[in-house]
Image (cartoon, rainbow, N blue to C red; front, side, top):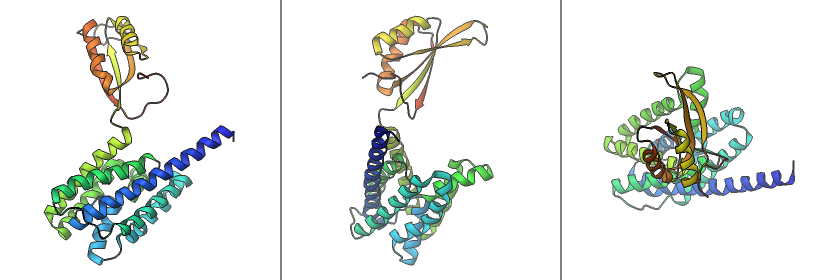
Length: 284
């Protein structure tokens, strides 16, 4: 292995472990200081662990490790050794941190606990997911089950969480179950922000008879690269030039202004891009 590649691999591993550790501590803080004291639960294995811990009085951290272990073993062939190691490590750090924060309680206000618990939990889980690890065995199981039985990953996770929140309604009361669903929703949105970043990219396709002029204006005024694709009009049967480019969200309003200025009748399609690598898709 070349020296540069080896150094990059080591640096990436150290970076991953740092953020996984930090993410697990943050997630544990959210769980023990906001959610657990107010009987608000998360989804997945952590949610099941919280219900079982409440009923049996068993240690929550221990339950998280015990319930996640079978799924981590299942992931060995599917995800590879490094993912399994980092996931096991994340769960151990979570379990230890849960015990550290066990006797702290930030607020008794259910709405505040829901909002801030969801935001902080989502931040922690997002950091873990972004650095090639996981805290939730149901996500691993869903990847295996979905291919065998034809469910999508999202459908499987939604089904499991629906069952968990129904059980939570019986154990903690329906009001707390509704707060739990709201926490899960908030955490999911924050995870998306952490994974994708606030300044997400957009892919743009522009169909116009003035494609050349629009492309040149975008290159000169926004300093971005564009690609010309060939198309055929469905009604007219005529050749069409299609402009394709990827830009930052902040540049989109200026781009639309330039397009409208040159051709008000241009067709523009904008799609979210979760990740973009290489090229010159935004200003430097």
